[in-house]
Image 1: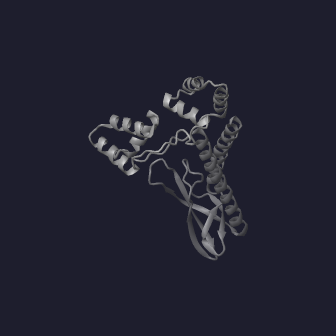
Image 2: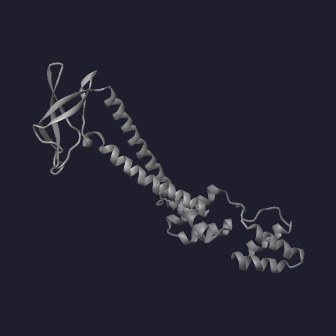
Image 3: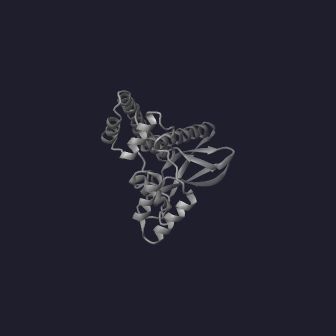
Length: 248
């Protein structure tokens, strides 16, 4: 679309009877072809009501597609591009894009993500991680506030399947006269506790197998990790969106 300033300039030249100067102005200023420049001048002069750049082909889209496909099958891509350019009076770049879209070997490709999309994605991931950390913190609070505190003893260490993962404690505890065991969920290297060490447990009175060891590694490790990542991603994402908006 021709900028309003250029349209005003063309109208000014037309009012002073300088039609050729108006055409030359469009060719030089906007690198338009001579036919396109003439079309714009005719449109702005009121000689035609058809907006430049909206020309329609007399050939049906289905027939044009079939012709392009025939040329592509015979490895005449250049000829196909020229035919589309001539028929629709569009630029070389636009014609190549249309031909590439018809080519059977061309699959759908996502457009390259601009900086704004990247920052939006970071902000979204950061917000999600932050919400997860808050949710887990709330879950920990609601569980521990209703749980019964008992003392257990580390009786064994359960080592991960992969070497170097570390070990999780296996804790034995008494519940209503019954001996029960619980295996921690967090592996650490070196282990956070030793065999024989006593630890505090939060036990769900409605389900005594539902246990939480009162250790930072068991209660807060995921909250810390996701909270930190959420803060960093959110900070980068929202700052990027903010400064990008100010530049617009």
